[in-house]
Length: 414
Image 1 (cartoon, rainbow, N blue to C red):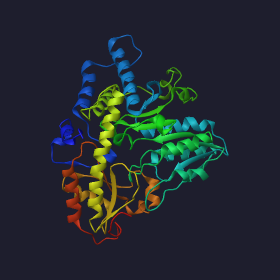
Image 2: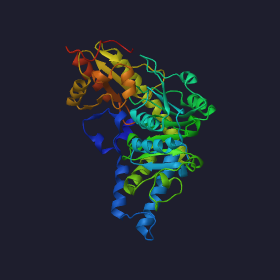
Image 3: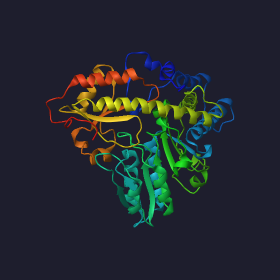
Image 4: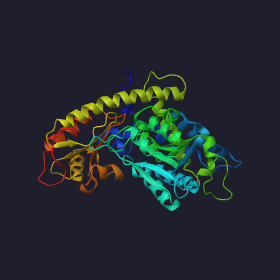
């Protein structure tokens, strides 16, 4: 394998210290090229779009280049890339827009696997429209979401299925393509939360069968910018609320206010960074991204296996979930210890991890963890190395069980 995390780490100023950033499930650090791209926009001067002067033209190019980059990353079309503050904000916008066509008796399908950003906007919109929410439950304790579960949920009046491409706490990767195929048979649209999937694997929105695919650049070494990728023809059928003088063309009419032009340049630089992760990658940027992200997935899966095996071997640790296919994400508890206390102890040793429900409100509820403080979440990304995993395992092993009620019993994967 030509991919090496050690080579890549040199591009990240934040990785030069002793801190181990094992919080990739919540966001990533930023390479120097992204910082420089953002700074260059401010150095060169910027202006709003649709002006007649050079700074305005530069910002128009920045927007176009950002759409091109996200299309290359996801396999979509540039004219179908809607930019926004983040996935949550964009999902609320699309929920409000789509729900205008929903009527009492219509149905939507949500899952107990999803981050709340792909649950609550739809549930709230359905309630206002008088539509019914039907739920796809996960298997407990594995955390799997079988595609066949949707066979009994999809009906003639199903208008939308909202599904994650990967769980942000369990890492579970459901068969989105199969679910989308079933949804399309009844005429339902499919909204895919790709926030946690995009950093860990090659993405092809067409192969997934998504009508809408949401992603956030801060999860893949970019700034805090979100995007929803859809077919331009589909976007043309939707009429979101907008200001009267704002552009009515697609995809601009879905975007409110002045965008963060410098950050959009950073998004393009982040996609370029991903395309260079595997030094043997050649061809178009899209082709280089597919090669590099395939190498990322293989590397991360090897490191994840080592992490999971190591955690399972610690008597006072309980792994939460055991999906057959998952991203490089581990969710675990320590017997007798509150998850936040475990995360605090790891932080004391320079190991950054998260604890709690991590906005996975439905999954942690289904697993009986929400009211107990959730669990500890360690997430690996392309710049993490084996030594950091070993440090985490050593600290958790040395921590031992606590004497409190939280954390559950010890043992291996459930």
